[in-house]
Length: 281
Image: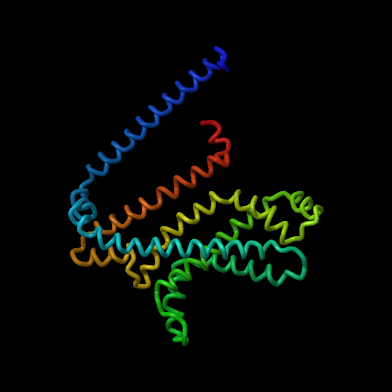
């Protein structure tokens, strides 16, 4: 049975000591910063009034059912929009990477789309679609604010996600294309079986980051009158002008975001994307 050499054991002991020391230093510095923040905020003259207005536990508990019900709508919007954004973003990215002069109009349209919706503020797109399209009174067109709020999210986020996919596609070395074509694969076959699997694997952490942002921005559909978590908190606040329901909504969004953020970090570590900083730790 293999046994590490004395020198290897010394190295492992040294690494364990460094890891324990780093953990203790990190814990101590975190506690110190937290204590300074708590004491500093608590010593401000307006803190009693802020605590009563924003951090009332009884008011927060009373508003929790309504805010949680609204949050379920945000989750559904995020899931549906996330799937549509992934599909459309990949399609736009593929269109932007098509080669040959015959595809120039397609590339121009895809480029114009990404430039337009990356430049427009998301809130403006929500207003234009949520209030503008129903005002046209088109026959057969739904007037549901959730649908048009979701459409605004899909249009805007697709532009960003398409650029992420395009970066992944163009990161694949040209020799991969040349080798695949020399083996007799057609352009679509090369794209499907060789390039896209590598490209998607490389951009998964960036896509998960976009999903975290989408989860937060799903709350913007509240401006259309949709009773999501933010709107529910606004309704609760209007009864007594206590802003604790907004804090409750924010905490629920954070609770949903943290697992996605940790998943993003885990994927990045598995793919060795921490870079020189990660290697030094």
